Length: 110
Length: 110
DNA sequence: AATATTTATCGTAATATTGCAATATACAAA
DNA sequence: TTTGTATATTGCAATATTACGATAAATATT
Image (cartoon, rainbow over all chains, first blue to last red; front, top):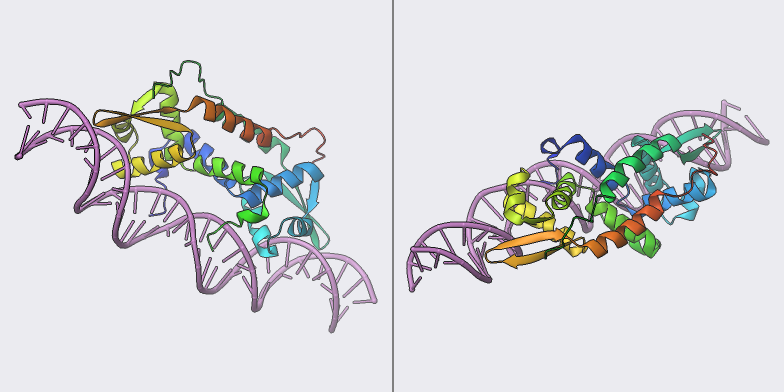
């Protein structure tokens, strides 16, 4: 079906999956790493930096923006993007809770 | 195209994306949380616990196993699954490095 | 051996994702 | 106002993902 049955999962599980999904493409990982490194970035720079066409980058930026992980600011004809610090930190809390589940009680039976 | 251009990204970026992708579905998040909680789990229990059909769960388990995040052990007619501790820890290192990028120098210009 | 139980695989339908050419939009400069 | 520059949107083709019925495979039980 290609359609996840989100209604049978908790809000937390769906939230984790949504964040993870957006990190599930190397272009978006690359964009975010670049924004961290350069601090702020004009969209066009990303197109040059990453080897994908302009509409493709624009689409990936839209997804990152939609989840609130980045912000965009129009500067003349270009748009400056940067990490949304507050939302990034909130996302980290959710993901860390999932990734750092306690392994100490785990017997690794198999 | 539906096909990610992995060749233009670094191994690290592709690795992050692959891990994230597998967490990008709430069923797999749910399965992993259950394995952490119960420590080890018979496949059939997961089918009962999560509201998805047996072939669907089996498929999700296969993906998790393929990435090395879980192990499976045949016990008679059933199969016991559990977290692969070592690989989980290694995955955490990769993901943490990405998630915990330094925000302190970030001006949040936009 | 026949039957039951459990999990994996196959096949397939429905939907989602990725990438880009073409085009639209928005603003700046001449 | 026209031209140029930068980004967004649209439309579409190719591929991937999700879900599950049907069935196979593997082992236990009788």
